[in-house]
Image (tube, rainbow, N blue to C red):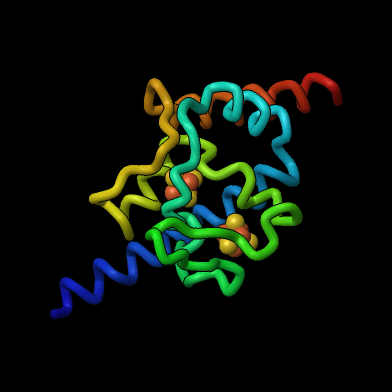
Length: 129
Ligand code: SF4
Ligand code: SF4
């Protein structure tokens, strides 16, 4: 029981951190976002899993055919548009839907790449000073 609660809490923390990470990426790491979106392969299968991270988004519509739609599709936040940004995002959505994979994928696990890009960006800022 305690183990299950602990797992649920850890999963929620990871999902929440992912939301914050994507938000800060769209605001402060535009070059990283552009780079990642170029690397992203596949297409959205409209499973709606990424709209259920941490909580079910009130804008999410469950369609009768099992697909989902967004009430504000054309005006949805950038955070939604860029999902998934890397393998970390996919891992987070897999916490709540491990059986149905996301339609997007990345060739390699780019978590290290994310750190590398972050370091590169920091170095570039330092060099400019
Ligand atoms: S989890 Fe992937 S396939 Fe499912 S709605 Fe989100 S981006 Fe699309
Ligand atoms: S705004 Fe739309 S795309 Fe974004 S989480 Fe909500 S339902 Fe999903």
